[in-house]
Length: 361
Image (tube, rainbow, N blue to C red):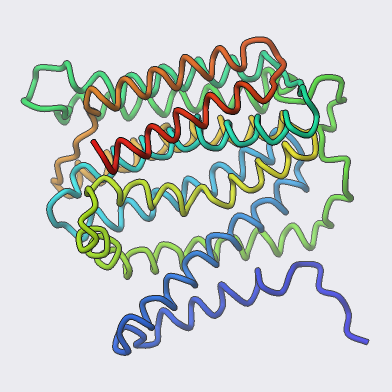
């Protein structure tokens, strides 16, 4: 009888096959080869997040959701930088579009689905109000400084920062995110634990993996992240060409990148909400939003300064309105420590409006 593997076979096989496919001349066989690379890219993203979840389960909350958020953000930064370095018109707005899309998907789509799913099954769900407040305070400040303020600076024309301003905002973003991580993991760790749970967190529903399995997942996570970076760079031109050929707005590229990267994490958050672990869902969602903007902006700022590329960060008036509406609604929805289906429906309605105004601006 074959011994059962401690990790799912697909999470081991897919990254290995992806590495093999990368070095084979699959582009020479046309669209089939490109489609195969896309499948391996998505599979590697899913495998990366699975291994991050294994490591996260071993270390417990809130360190687990932090590891998962950092893994997802690493993938997102790799995709953005790969597309930026390929050049072409519109790449100066790619980081802004992707970060804004990720934030809107998380605040309205991911949280909305979690609140709706949990409300349908459990009527009301509870969470730690202190942890949510800490995350939203930091998130509001970073979003305003990186996506709104550039529209009103006067050093240079347009919704862009000068080099000095870009360096300042990158440092401020890192400080805000670093402070949040310190609060989450050291100073006020209990803020991010479910109400009524002890310091061991909420991962008591299953046996944690052994040290060997966790170490294997950590190594496989690095393997997955490496091939994601390489495949993203290889497929970058095809993603842009597909959007342009479909006659869709260029900002849809950012939405596609954010959706691909956040899909596995969104599924993890949804599953947690369905198991009445809303605190885990909110830790994943808000932590991912903070990591996305708090780490992506500094990363693309460094790329911009080193390569001489100009990046546009300021969002337009329509996007500012949707962003402020989303933040205000999330704050009201999560302001009592309890949620129900109404908040979920309202957030999903805003998410639908965001997607509709991309296609029909």
